[in-house]
Image 1: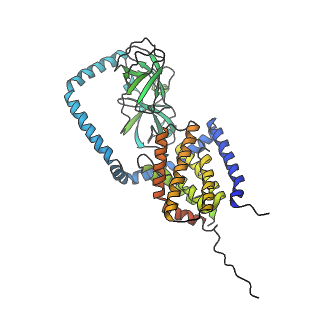
Image 2: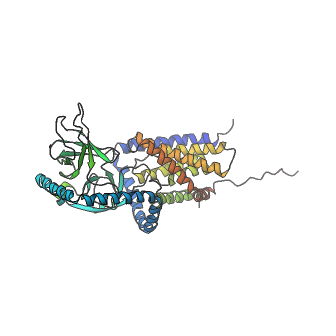
Length: 275
Length: 172
């Protein structure tokens, strides 16, 4: 009888490895904390090396970015030039809008600007090719951050912390399909759950009455309550109120904060720490 | 240095490269899949068993780096290494263009399967079209940097590959 070839010999090994993989996967999906801690440990060991390489390759990265994104930069320049022209033509209108915004903020008594926050720099996309709507920041648990904290900019809600290591964290952006936040419509006072769509907008699905009159451009803010997101953080404005829905209402929200080309964000410390 | 120590050194170097240089320099949002690449090359040069074990450990590091649960990438990496080794056994023609094309296909397949496994377990949120596009780009950019990595993998396995056996007819 002929001796088994390498392929035959490798079958039991492969089966054992697959069984081990499936066991690990099941354990971690069910929330085995030692495995999470072990993963975090690996990332924490690599973290300082990443920081050093980041700094060392910064100039080369800029050149690379210029080469790879040349077309996008040109388009962006063109877009910004157009926007600037529009803005110049709408100065008076902007003044009026600002006054209106100040009045609205006064009406709802927004304590948003008073929240204790930690400023973090955006480092880029986390490792891996399939992490869309995620960004990495340069602050972690050493700076007092923890999973689930709200991430904002001066303009409004950006997302929440998803994976917090010692020196770095991953932010899941508000447009990520797994992101959800309780929100309130400022004028109609209806509350609901806004979710990310995977595109550049959010969708308000549950909670809003079918007969509620919602205007286009109505301001949407976080509702707070039992959520880890503090109340009254601007989320965006309504672009499609879906006023003629007969069964389920799906309201589209344009985010107040621009999630493209972010450089710095503010991580809102826990509500207990703020109070 | 034994093959195991060399393989460990190669693995750790690949992890650091994946986490640093190759994560920074992206093409169309896609980076080189170094850990997948070394798994494929380990399967090709080291045989199915070595490839499967190497791929298993490489995948655990990939899980840690990407924040995926342990075992997710191992469902793809180890079988892929065995598959590559099996194809290598059946290769009749050996031209660089065939190797290059094979590598692009293998990395694309591995990356897309890992992505779909992530979708299956609710760990990835990406459109199917974008997933396939990024997998293809990952295949192309990984193949572009494969030559030096291939030499390193060959070096790591050089002690386990038997030298040419000279057959002699015994003198009467």
